[in-house]
Image (cartoon, rainbow, N blue to C red; front, side, top):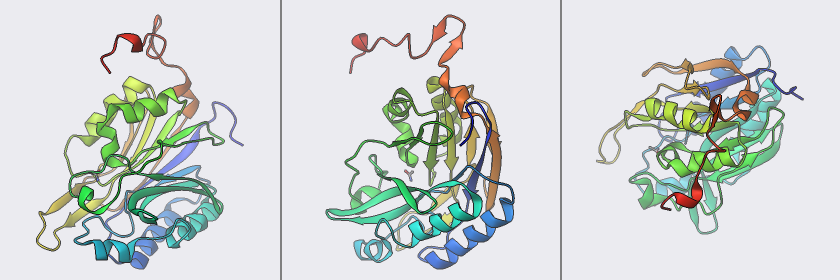
Length: 272
Ligand code: ACM
């Protein structure tokens, strides 16, 4: 158990998957993580769809690469978790009864702590995936409650707000950012909720099946509740960022002596 207030070690993987080469992509992430985590790590976050690639061109292709909840990605996260001691979070397409979801698994030593299906699908994802129907998860961990959201969810302020109001101190955020304003935008999200955010993004380009080219902007990052960028990866390289954080700093929602973000909320006056 991590004691209250103690620092935890967070690792963020920024990879560049070759579309459809799941085994190769998993093996590259395995090599990267094992080379970088000689010391115990508490949390490892991987990008959205980190092993398949992002730009699916047909339902058939997506179906071929989709997994069951306890498929190869779960097995890989289990292996990484046993080898590093970390809770592992990352994205994959999951075959559900009504269709395929753009999902994230949270795994610790062979236990599926949560599986989250993205609730705000971005652009052409809407032609392929079905929307998640369950609330954003908050998982009890030895370092306090942890939330999960996926990429575009961040642009819906209610998503992170609801995780923070639900008690999450840190949020794992597997992403495939293509829009340029994510890294800066997430600083404000972290500050307005006084919460740690851990965004794992990918790098590289995809231009498949006549679709518009996509360039992934990297810049995976860890942001503190004060908006300090505790670590940020490059815009173009495969790499793993390691940073120590104290999630319990996010327990206080005070931004100044007499101003507490959560106590001063006026939900009865908001036009919702
Ligand atoms: C995104 O949600 N992958 C931009």
